[in-house]
Length: 390
Image (cartoon, rainbow, N blue to C red; front, side, top):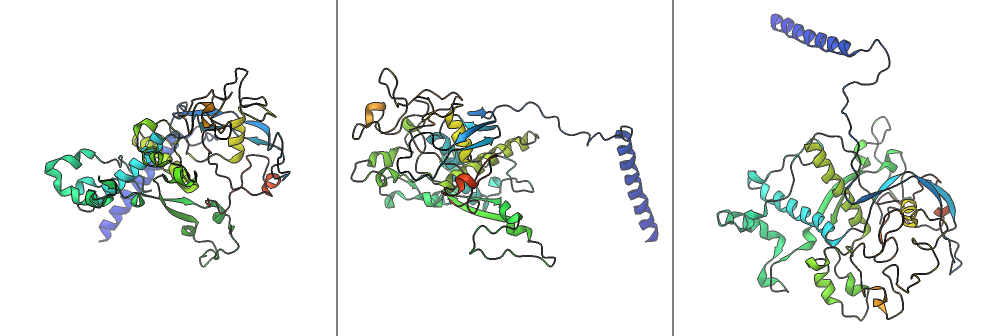
């Protein structure tokens, strides 16, 4: 026994000596050279469909009349770092990629519980090492009929469907993810009613309490077309706006704040999975813009202007409207569309961004509070209540 122990020690010492010699070989005369052998980072390619907004300063807040004299958005000079932002609003077809991923991953997970060929390899952090997308050919192959009972758990049977066809059970389409609440890392409790954070024997906050877990229904609220238009016939839009290919390039609607945040998390994980497969460091992550970033981007570099195109009017010298909104009560079509229009239907602003006024409302990561306009920092200002409340 002693012999084997001594032999084992010698082997370990030999390994340590090799490590020390290897390190010495990389030593550059005892100078401060940084860690050697780090990955070589090529110039970052522009994220697909996004525009780089340069750093800058601007007067954030109202530049025109305050109709109610509320004084709840007084102008303030702020600065923002450079950032990327989508050139257009997220379209139905882009958001459908998210919904499809959730359908595929849930289906594949259910199949993987009984059939090993559907298991997904993951790394130590739970990120998939292969795409979670399901090969939908298995649905229609007669030799794979055993899968159908599991796949059909996500669908309403034809006999029970109101439409006469097999339909998705959209409430089952949940995207589960976790995120770090940095307010808790700092020991802050965002709400006075929050329970005290758990601590260990040393009085330090237990690390797992920093992690927040979300499970978000991802399917758009298609009933928004009926809910927001009282006593109007918009049932065709409820049925087809998100589902029909004719509306692929229209902006997605019926998305709440938590769904928009979950979409950004999924978009980041999709990028991480790809860069892990090609063994490259991930250059960035996706999130909703801050209110300051959105306003700076919307202004397009113009200062003191009411609209992204400058000027005081919503139409040009030829009488053509410059954005999609309600031009006159009851006359919805004067701007070219009685409802939303495909993204990019009007000219971009000077940053190359489309629809920064009109078409649909857009989410930021900020929470609205009257008091915060003057209290937030003047560098990258942002106010978020409880970090993820929407």
